[in-house]
Image 1 (cartoon, rainbow, N blue to C red):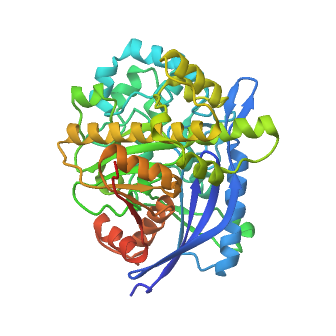
Image 2: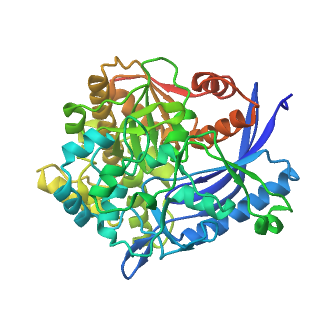
Image 3: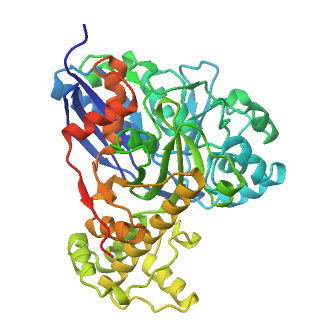
Length: 479
């Protein structure tokens, strides 16, 4: 007989921070809180932008230690989710003791642009889309690899959550939802496309076997036991691409509901049972990424709150003090809508870190639009422009998938931004149901609990638990 409730730890790693979330889950309960939080971000080095992945692992391990102490060792399992596409390269004959080669690059590093030309020189984008179903993003893994100049002694590639899972357990698997973002996974069979891999000059053996959420990776290494209260914890695979876990944690309320997982990026789309790999979806730059339980995340990337956070960072550097986001959003809400300038948030100049106010002013000047006059006006323009991008993507998603969207669920940090939620409802014409904010951690925890036998059923059954335990806010179109 399975216990009525079980406790799990979700290691949830984002582009700016990471945390360990403790959750107690049962058929009628879902409660959680942060056991630890730590910073993450870009590390500029002489050869480009990198991640401090070893430091991130150290922090995650410390957070798991805190979780073990808090629960007195009663953790049923641990699982990791993170951002997609980035990876580490390993070398060594013993698969349990391989060495990391160099510091993993950050997907915003400019080196990937040359990789695009190299890949498309061998395989056209149309052919790539037919095989992998992915939208064009210059930082996708296959473009990074084309520019990597792989050292001849690189024996293994592991994506970020799989690499951390390897360091925890000594076992190597590639979780399928994250593998689907590399551009090297067959969109229909969900296995490595070895023909494509070889065509791009890579070795198929570089990639670890693909496994689905719900598989057990292994137990934490015995060497880590002193840091984990003497325990060897089971490590479970969940939707290790954080958006895959976020969609599990989105309480989609109708068969035609759309979602926006809104953080640094706004992932706008639909959950489907089969991919949409058409000329029209390719032209619209929609992607077919792997979801939990074999679902397809049919979506496109729209620039999200990155624009706002980078704008605040610019002002912080100029003034040497933190900015009041709540106050700025309150002031922005009072700006006359007739004075709001809408610009294209998808412009490539916004991808890299830097002075966003100057870049926005430059784009406005190029399109002969007024430049926002003050900070409140600029914040309102950013929010409305993001919402405009969301609305356009929702319309396209429905058209391409032949779905009559009736409601939009917004989850993630962006769901706390009432101005953005209302603007999205107004510009799309759909009600926007905001929350839960912690959809990614919730999705991670729910799949762990189902794997442990505490929960059962389909994704719809898991989402029903979310609806019973969390109360979202609904924003209805006003104009």
